[in-house]
Structure formats: C-alpha cells, structure tokens
Amino acid sequence: AKSFIGTLVQMAVQDGFIKSLNEPITNYLPNLLKNDPTFTNITIQHAMNMRTGIRSTENYSNPFSDVLKLGFTKNINSKLKNLKIDEISGGEFDYKSVNTQILASIIEAATKQKVQDYFIQKIWNPLGMENEATWNIDSKKNNTIRAFCCLNATTKDFAKWGKLYLNNGNYNGKQLLDSTYVLSTTLSDNMVKHNGYKNQIW
Image 1 (cartoon, rainbow, N blue to C red):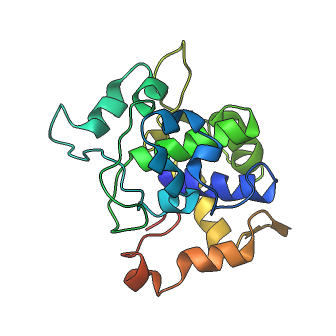
Image 2: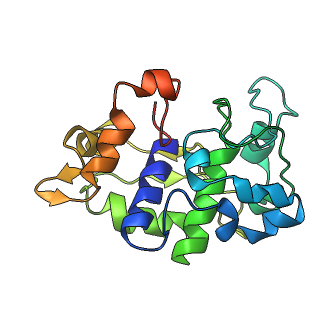
C-alpha cells in the first residue's frame, strides 16, 4: 500500500497538482504549523524516504503504539493534527507508517479528491486490474483510507504495478510514470544512501 501511495504522489507531481517533491509538507497541510513552526523544514521527499523526524512509535506488538492507533482510530485526520517532531528532518532513516498517511493527506489536499478515487483514475484503471479490491477506511463517516496498509488485492493485480516499474514507468505502450523517477527510485545505490528504501519502496 505504501508503494502505491508513493507512486500516486509522483503522479500528482506529473499532473501539476504538486509542484515538487522538495516542497514543504506544510504547503498542503498548513495546520501542522500550529503544532510546531519547524514543520516547514519537512519536505514531501523527506516523507517519501521516511526521514521526517516526526514522533511516532512503530511497535506492532504494543496496543498503545501510534501505528496501531492509526490502524484502529475512526478518525485518522484527527490523529494527524496532533503530530510532534522528535528529530531534525532529513536525518536518519526511520520507518514510520505515519509518513505514508501524511502523503495521502497531501494527495487529497492537492488533488481535491479522495485518495481512493485518484488511485482508480491513475493506477487501477490504466493498469487494467482484473479483480475487485478493497482498501480499509477509518469509518463510513470520514471515509479516509488507512494509506500505510490494508490495500487488499490479488497477487496478479499487485504484479501489474510491479510490471509498471519493471518497464521504467511504461505500461503496454503508455508512459504512465516518469522514467527518470523510476530509475531514481530503483537505483542500486539506494542501498547505501537510503537504507535500501526510497520513495515508499524497498
């Protein structure tokens, strides 16, 4: 699911909804400034690479950890309003699901539509997915997807997304994703520079 969100962020850049991955996340989520003005130092690229320094615990065995609160809350956006910063952005890689949820919120703010709708328009239909899928939401009232997880699809349809990257963003003759972005994401030197992780992809 995280990798699909990262792909959608780049597609929003290509569509002109997002100006650049180097923009501050506060350009799209200005409410974060109420918590800490230094949120302006965190870029979309920092979130893509799990280097935001945002405080959040990623302990799947602790029922009180932040990631499980995101997994069970009925209002994800309310959780995002209370975020704090622990470290300097751009520092050490720290895998935290909250980064992906932030990216989903940026997509919605930029495109003025729900992530799931943009996902169908930009990925699901163009790749010719063959089976129905579901994406867990927080509640019927808020209808916000749990972007960091919980995309339930068949192996074959997941593989079609893999084929998109395997062919440098081209799918059956159509260039859906910028080839330079794909190469940057999948370069072998990411093992050294990004702990093997870049743009929401291992």
